[in-house]
Image (cartoon, rainbow, N blue to C red; front, side, top):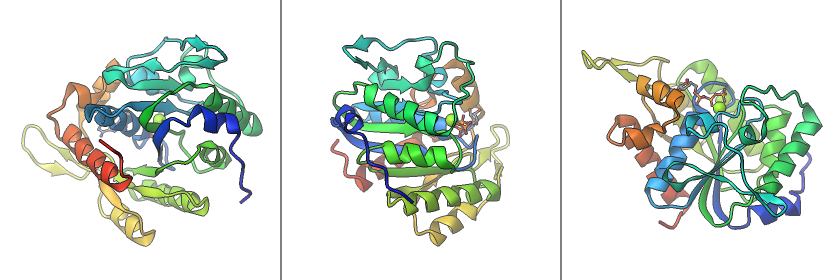
Length: 270
Ligand SMILES: Nc1ncnc2c1ncn2[C@@H]1O[C@H](COP(=O)(O)OP(=O)(O)OP(=O)(O)O)[C@@H](O)[C@H]1O
Ligand SMILES: [Mg+2]
């Protein structure tokens, strides 16, 4: 694997960011963007200056999930300023730069890497305690080139559902990150169970055990599980971050536990 030198403009643009956490999955649709946005909100609830960066060029959903669709970043000299989201979280997304939110980006290979490199150098973040980065699905060349462009990252969180096929893709993601000598912070199992609101019965929607096995096989921490909650879906569609609207829910409490683990693991000053 050829090492890519991070352009100095990117390092400069991100130099006041203390901790960068990247959210990756392998398989699509397992909840990366949901985890990334709610994780950012949960860090902000701890009074940490937080940002979220959406590098998904094909499906930049962060503006939608945070109710910021249609906004356009202001120019600041040669740079652009992040949009101020809920709880003061600074938000930047490829979605803000596309003409229409259903624009299909048809860039390929090297053009993608160049566009992302430009994007990363152009954002004026200023001081941040934590920046959460949401990536597109997959473990291919594009993911690799994005990972190679992020300076001094604290590590990668791998999101998976408990389903074996999702864990298999997550394992590929773990191996990719390890091969790049980047730290894997651990696996988060999303949509692990559903508690029936009427009878209280627990349903393991996607099975169980596979993620634990993968975390043992690859010696990465199992950072926790998040339940399936149908309100996550409706609130996402409304553009309201779940952990802000439903702070007493099990999902919000599990995010609090996750954030606390990460604060300890990467020594974030609270
Ligand atoms: N814990 C949860 N409970 C209920 N629904 C959830 C949960 N997590 C995610 N979802 C729903 O699952 C779907 C996929 O989530 P999301 O968009 O976050 O996945 P993704 O991994 O970012 O997808 P992509 O690979 O397309 O970027 C969404 O409809 C989201 O609302
Ligand atoms: Mg996503």
